Image 1 (cartoon, rainbow, N blue to C red):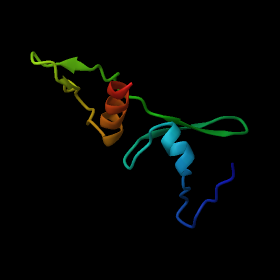
Image 2: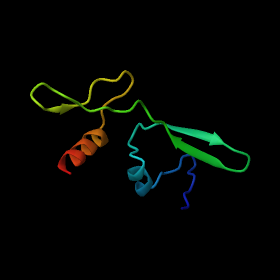
Image 3: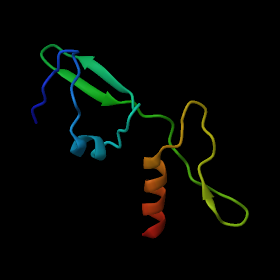
Image 4: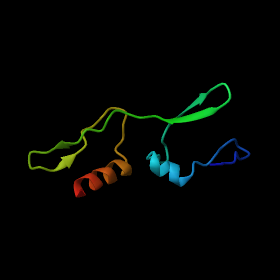
Length: 82
């Protein structure tokens, strides 16, 4: 898949790739410079463990340094609908 670098040195990560890796605005990527390649790796935060309230409602417990995203909520909804 080809992308173009703009005048400011930015590239656009195609939507297909953003969706596949659950990247959203503000997602951090680690740039790894190899001998003859450049690799971008998504920064993965702590695993989001699902918890349940006493009345059986699901929630994500707070994790320092990790904000619950729309993707987290959508993944939860998808999992609960299966």
